Image 1 (cartoon, rainbow, N blue to C red):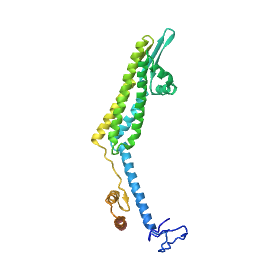
Image 2 (cartoon, one colour):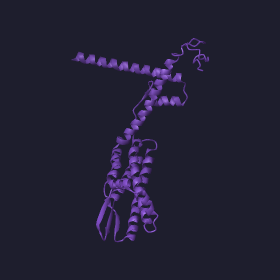
Image 3 (cartoon, rainbow, N blue to C red):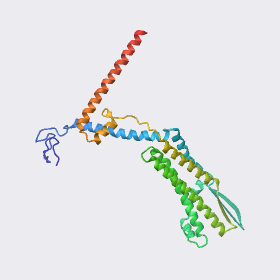
Image 4 (cartoon, rainbow, N blue to C red):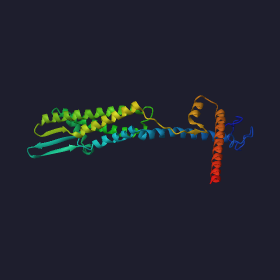
Length: 294
């Protein structure tokens, strides 16, 4: 059962009229202005919060020359993955020597067509098991590194947030560690498989892997520099009911009565209207003076 917002009388299903049987107040329109004001305050407060996020988003990308450089360096690792990362060569008595350079596209083709059952079987082999374990670790590491690069690029949208610098640097360090692990374990795979088949299989890390790690190091460096120097976020001034949003949030946090806040809003709006009227009159007087001089 609902209660009357004015007198508190409980209503039954038989009280179908719009007016309260106890005090006669219209239940539909009672407090409507106050509700509308509260909804307007909530909408403006939400806009103020959103505007701050948008201001930080803008600063994350074009807040300074360093942030613009960071965007470029964030894309470079993906481009570096298109370079030859490693090379595998096969040779045999009745097999023509075949050498293949592996980059991100080849890794994608490899993962999409790989027989994981056979790979797990090979890792359990007493002959080539250690080689294929190293191969699996190298493959997983470079894939995780690529995922972190993409995630880091997306998270640049929150780079000017409270934990933006810590998050960026942490992800960069993890990315570099995974890339280095991938290189180390591919070298181990190449050495182990060559030890088993010295005349038939060879493998080596190519320059693209080192370029990739280099771009990650540069990205880490620029993030450390940005963290030390900081990025000035230019916040657009927002208002809630005519008073600055920051002041409004402080009043709400301090537990100020809503009626008191609305009185302050009314005063601020009145002053704003007066100031606009004065500016308009001054502009009109200036135009009249120019006409007279002409």
